Image (tube, rainbow, N blue to C red; front, side):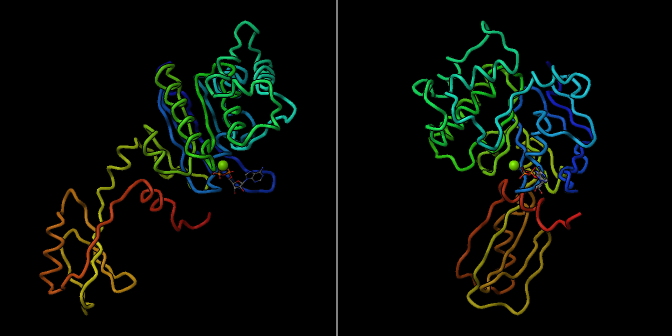
Length: 308
Ligand code: ADP
Ligand code: MG
């Protein structure tokens, strides 16, 4: 499949209590990408993912999964996508092998196309294949959920906060699996994460959602590239009465007598900034620089928006 693995148009969700969780989302997710869906708690990420998974009913809008309209072709669109949910909902009396077999049954995967052993191996649960789920650690349960998302060989894998609260080892194991599925099988990956560094490292493209709306959507490189914004923070020997002004440099006072000078590295050099400061007769006791990362874009875009 070329083009978009998922197309979302005008997607809205209002929960029964009246909470408007999605306020008209338009989003296209390219086939073969690792796509990051970022946003603060309560932004609507899980709602969106659960709609894709067919677990939550949308209020209005269109969702197309792997070319299948979710309303007109629910079976095919469901078969195209595997979802690892945020919640650890597992039947405590099923072993990992049972859980995979039952899931495969639910998706109508014929016995001869089931790959339970392979999946158990991949998620590192071969040793625990026949243990009760209730005896599995949190990390093992998460791995089993990943395995369950894969039983029907979906084209698209969706991971909702897969690494929230997991240790580094499991996190690395999850990411290496995800990368492998993407590279070797061309699987399209959609993930939400709280760890922006992780998104920066893993994702080709990113959408940031806030209060049920997409506030940014670009390649990770472009999003970071927008940010050639830098800030030099100076501690003056003594606080100046007035602040100097220079083209392309925004100057403001910070707590503790500090002075912050923000500029764009593509237009202004650190030397220009220092010259401005020295030219104003300000003596520098200490200096540090701050560089924007995804966290800054994120904060910038999700900060102080009036609740609608
Ligand atoms: P995120 O995953 O980005 O943290 P969610 O999609 O879980 O956000 O939630 C978005 C908003 O919808 C939140 O305000 C949340 O409280 C609300 N919400 C989520 N699930 C339900 C539900 N089942 N019923 C009512 N409100 C819900
Ligand atoms: Mg969530």
